[in-house]
Amino acid sequence: MQKESVLKILVICTGNSARSQMAEGFLKHYKKEWEIYSAGIKPAGLNPLAVEAMSEKGIDISNYKSKHLDTFLKKQFDYIITVCDNAKESCPVFPGNARYLHWSLKDPAAVEGTKEEKLAAFKKTRDEIQEKVLKFI
Image (cartoon, rainbow, N blue to C red; front, side, top):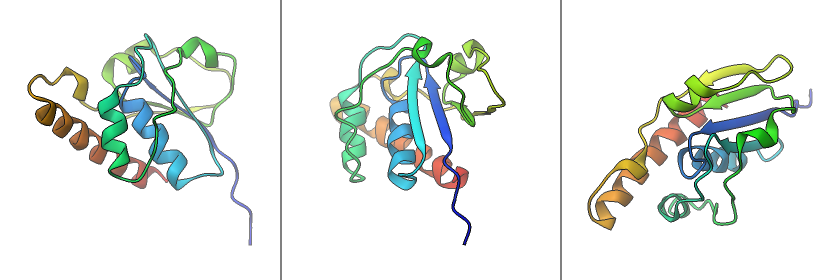
């Protein structure tokens, strides 16, 4: 049996507060042997609603931190995944032969309303991310 290679993946969004963090959480959950990172163009801090939505799936991202994209500019990745249109447009070129994927996901943090309405938006985005991650792996 051939050993699966370790993939290095960077997930990017604007604030590294929700979508990229949730994608990082799912990828780490399903592929523990891969090296998974997330970053933002303008890190905004981890959104507590993202933490709450992921905890319902049994994935704890509460210790994740928002990181600036610059932290990773000299690293090589197998895949760069942008999860918002702004990140796709602003994504720099990384060294090596990374494959670039784009998942256009609505920003759940942009939804206004009650906490329940906002959380519902995070859950919807979370489920879309999970579906994309499962197709990817």
